[in-house]
Amino acid sequence: GAGVSQSPSNKVTEKGKDVELRCDPISGHTALYWYRQSLGQGLEFLIYFQGNSAPDKSGLPSDRFSAERTGGSVSTLTIQRTQQEDSAVYLCASSFRSQPQHFGDGTRLSIL
Amino acid sequence: TQLLEQSPQFLSIQEGENLTVYCNSSSVFSSLQWYRQEPGEGPVLLVTVVTGGEVKKLKRLTFQFGDARKDSSLHITAAQPGDTGLYLCAGRNSGGSNYKLTFGKGTLLTVNP
Image (cartoon, each protein chain N blue to C red):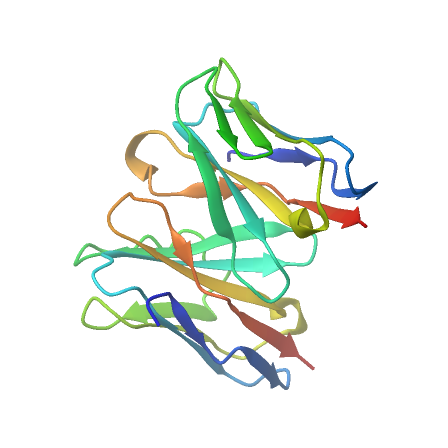
């Protein structure tokens, strides 16, 4: 399809395990965003990639969270030593420069 | 930190009724966007308003940006069950971090047939 693709759609893991979430942006989109959506909390900005510029990591809640974007396309968000408060829906969005963002359907992460 | 307060948080109405959702901030935004999100899906952009006082219409939906670009409203006329969903407002920051969107917590709308 032509939209933003995220995988897996659902992930259940035990507390303390590491998880990797993947985002395939729309082809040609230079900007990529990760957000976290917790129940009743709206969308929380995590990280922003734009081309070859240094990413804006100011929204990452702790050093257990990291993200990379390889070849200016696919991005992976990694959460190490997961905690129960990490349970949320993780949304990825992409855009061409500052044009409107297109969102994927998210990964629903549940930490047991 | 810029914040967007959205109200009401929950709204349950009957088909055919009118409703208004509000989005307020003490900060000025360069533009404001409204999204609708359905369960299990990502938010989908409905409209972007840019100019203070701007009004945009999308079928039965009317969006307004406040004169000072600090607040916005979404009015739905004669709501339909298909309008059910989570409505989110998002303000685009001014200045160097203008790629950032600040989201409200959303209004969960249920339209009953």
